[in-house]
Length: 291
Image (cartoon, rainbow, N blue to C red; front, top):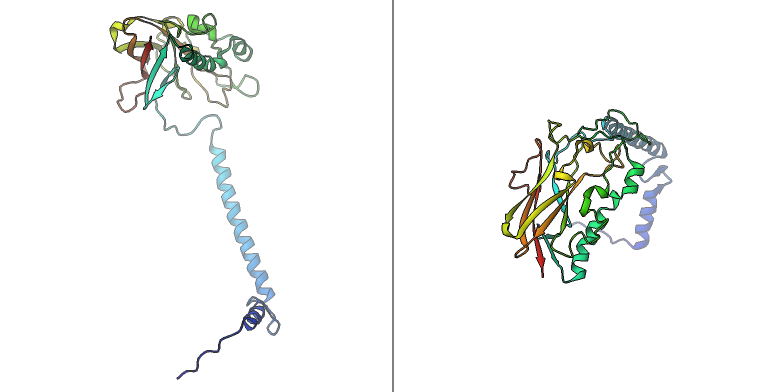
């Protein structure tokens, strides 16, 4: 019968470990001679230098092929989305409700629009944007002639929204039955909305439910047109002063003062029929005025 292995004390274990770390008899450090440790260290240094160099080269090659002004691949919608202000989302639906008898209610809506229109301040737009834009014509720019190696943008001023600019009526009509809504089309780099320069994109709103509750729909600028001079958009880096063209829609509510409205941006290249893309080319919302 084999003899039982003698149990070693803590001191003996420490002595064994110290002997493993440095063996004076064989001149080894942790089982290897210093010469072998040098060879191993040089190998791993060379290995990681090569790996780091290959990784850096791959990243440099990738960055060199990328255009800093536009993505190489755009997997977003080919047709832009449309949004409305004041934006009030309830369960993925837009419901704009206000009470003319409650000042805090309609002031909340007016404040949302005021904050949204801050970049459209007339003075700011005139100071930082191009003034010789040709209306009714695409503003194609092949070079970077604006300061800071950027491209010019045509100014869109708050005053162009007329009675819905908030300059003459800071309540935007929410203290009565003539509320203003702001329609904005989202940006897509290089997007041209139409093939026909004589037919610029425009906003058209229709009443889906509650037809008798809407007496009149007005558009600002005139006819709800988004002028072609605001297209194409060249991206945030190339177009830092660009602002989206807007259309203000003023509705005259009567009767029950509740209606379901759909506003479309109409143009050749803007689609709106996709059922699973509720904001592509259009926006649908419910507008309700409480007494």
